[in-house]
Image 1 (cartoon, rainbow, N blue to C red):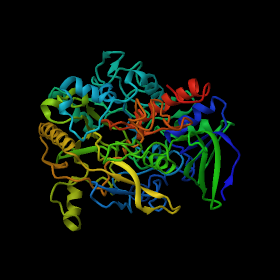
Image 2 (image 1 turned 180 degrees about the vertical axis):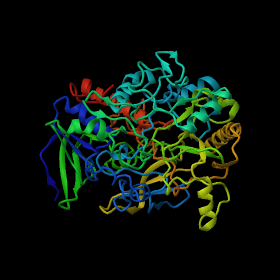
Image 3 (image 1 turned 60 degrees about the vertical axis):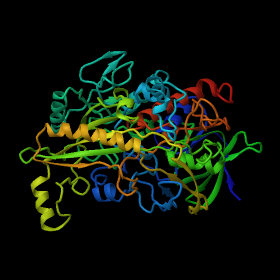
Image 4 (image 1 turned 60 degrees about the horizontal axis):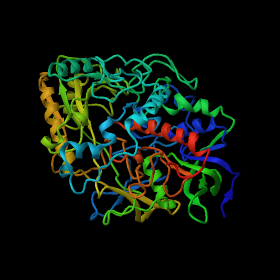
Length: 589
């Protein structure tokens, strides 16, 4: 029989970005809050201290800060006819583990979606007609607009400490920023970081072709900064250890650097680590949650934690799994198209071209997580979908984030993979390469979804999450379009050698190589209960005291990294809870 702990007004499952935001916002209302985190505690000191943190083998390759497959994994298949098998080693994406979640090990790249992405189905239908939307493509409109979210995007950027140059300030297009972005009510809290040589070289070539280069925005501090919670950041020193590492410099936007230390000082907030939530418990009538049951790693027992409000703030995959296990929303069925929980799983598609210059030196060890220059001339709002034969968009960039010798050793095509020839190629080409890559949207489809695996179970006896996903012709056409644009731009730079890495039209999704940790959907927002399990305030339609944050709410994936939209939606939902729900608990309209 499970132990029962004293009741809390709010229980938060997961203490990453959105758990930290919800914790701080609701703690300021005076509520008694408990956050439950499956992994260990992680603080800048001592866990991220120098030089232990910048160990490429343990952190970059062996994923010390990531979730272990032995804790929980997923099964995956590419279509309904395949048998899903468990991932024994993370590859395609890397889930965070512990306090701070994936916000500890990310690179910091932070974007807002374009306004057209928030109403994508209407945008496509109004401009080209519904006939260009493939029959099995399930794109939709968000039940909230860019204009609704703009104040909350702004709030997240000022809390997180984002560096950049505004390209659209209250409708005024400004030199040096992204002219294709949605309007901003004010500039970024910090100016853009300096640009390394590869970025300057890319910007010159892009400008010569009529494109509009701008420095990549994101969460690496360009100067000293103090946010509204009194949290301090120091300027990034371009150490080259950002993605897959915690920041010892207090320079990367992470929950630890920007929120958690202030939250931990709140007397009405507490958290427990080693507390894996197994399910959300329901009242007898099934209309509300009564709390959660978690497994206590220290005592080895199940514990029931009662609560008035339950907030699922874990990673997208685990949020959706908890919803399915707990009966939150009707499970989605791709055969009938009925049901909502698990619907519209999405991912990201990428590709790149490497250029090798014998007589130019790029010093790749000088890098930051957001270092680089981008163009958005092939974004969602700049492409004629009808003429090109696909729906989607991308930003294109030349980045230099690290020169780590295990993970970042780009070499020309046909280089031997070991031995004297490999060593010779490293001596000749290390530091002489730069790349141009794209980061593109992925639409939602009827057969892309999450459900509970019928065969495999975790150590607690719960079904594993099963993901069904593959590349579709729409995304592969978009990928080929971007390859053509990138290679044409690369050739103008006259490299000595070029090497391209793109998916071809026969490509199938492969879980082994890392691509992005940008998993979305499965707990999508919707205007009606028939469209998705969450309403416009991230509140479960069928359990009014359950709120679910994170990228699971995305109706389809955007062309950008998801964190900016995730953070904006978290502040939007927290505002609705504070202003409406706490005064009158029930379904929010």
